[in-house]
Image 1 (tube, rainbow, N blue to C red):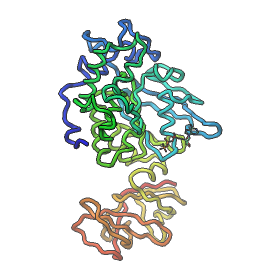
Image 2 (image 1 turned 30 degrees about the vertical axis):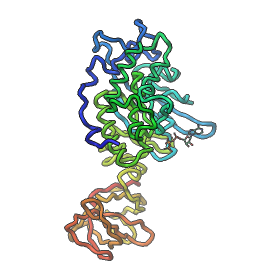
Image 3 (image 1 turned 90 degrees about the vertical axis):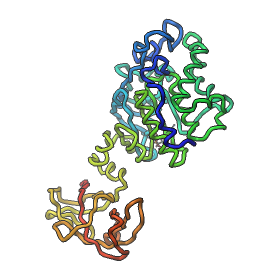
Image 4 (image 1 turned 30 degrees about the horizontal axis):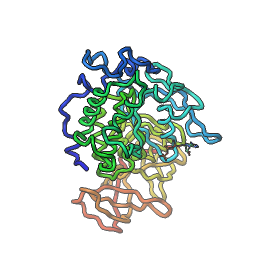
Length: 401
Ligand code: ATP
C-alpha cells in the first residue's frame, strides 16, 4: 500500500480544466437532461473541440419528503435534504438508521414509497439507474476478477449501446487519464487480485468516474480497509473531490471520517434526519440530545436542574446561564472539563483511572454510584494519582431537557 505522501502527491494535470479530462461532459452528461439522450455526434466524450463547453457542471441533489418502507418496516421517513452542487456531504448514523437506503434511493436502485428526488431542477424520481448517471462505489470493491484494472475501469463505457459508446481509442485514453488521477499509472494490466485493498478501492472510484457521472455516491467505501489505509484514502478522496468537483454523497458510520472529510454532515437516526450541518455545527452546536450523544465521545449523565444549579448524584454544579428546571441529560466530552481552583462552579471528583492518550493523559473521574465515569484530558506535566480528589470545572454545557 502506498504511503500518505505518495497518495497525496500532486497530479501533473489540473483535471477540471483539462480538455482530456474524463469528466469533460458530453451533451448527454452535462446535467441538462436526466434522460441522457445520445449525443448528436455518436460519442459521449467528444474529442478535440472546445472543452469548456463540454465540462460537467456539478448538479444539486434534493430530496423532498422522501420516504421508504419495506412492508411494515419504515426505513426512511420524510427526508428533506439538499446537497449543494459540488458539495461533499457525509451521511452519518448508527447501524440501521437508513443511510444506505437513502443512497440507494438517490442512485435509483430502490423506489421511494413517498416523496421525490431532484437532480438540479429535474425530477429524477422515476428515471432509470442508467439514465441518472450516478457513479457508485461500494464497500466491497465489486471489481470483475477476470478483467484487468484497465478493463474494469472501461467496463461502464464498453457496455453502452453502440450509438452512445465512445470509440475504442477514446476509451483507452480516458482509462489512462483515470489511472493517472487515482495514481495507479502503469498498473492497468494487473488483475484486481494483484492489488492491495486500498488500490482496489481506487480502481472502483476510477470506474465510477469513467462514465462521467453527474453525482458520485459512495457507500462505506473504506469500510473494509485497515485504519491507516482508511486515513490515507480519506485525504486522497478529499483531494480528488476538490479536483473533480462532483456533488458527492458519502455513507459512513465512522464519525471521525465524516467530520474530517465532509463539507457538511447529515446525521440520521431511525430513518429521520436529526441534523445537517458543518462539522463545527455538529460538534459545537448539536441540535438534539441524540446528536450530542452520538458525536465527540460524549458521556450522557442524568441530571436535575433547579435553584440555579444542576445536580449530578451528590454534586452541585452552579449554572452561569438560566436553564429550564427539571430532569435533563448532560453530555460531557473529555475537553469539557478543566482543572479548577476554588472558584464558583467547581466541584470535586475522585480519579478512578488514568491512561496515556497521545501527548496527554486521560483521567477517568468517578461521579458516584450508578453514574458513568467522565474523562478529563490533562497535560503530562500535571501529576495526579489514582484515588486522588480533583477540583474540576465544566467549561461546556451541553444540556438537553
Ligand atoms: P448500516 O450502517 O448497518 O449499513 P444503514 O444506516 O445503512 O445501516 P439501511 O441499510 O439503510 O441502514 O437500513 C435501514 C432500515 O431498513 C433497517 O431497519 C433495515 O433492516 C431496513 N431494510 C433495509 N433494506 C431492506 C430490505 N431490502 N428489506 C427489508 N428491510 C430493509
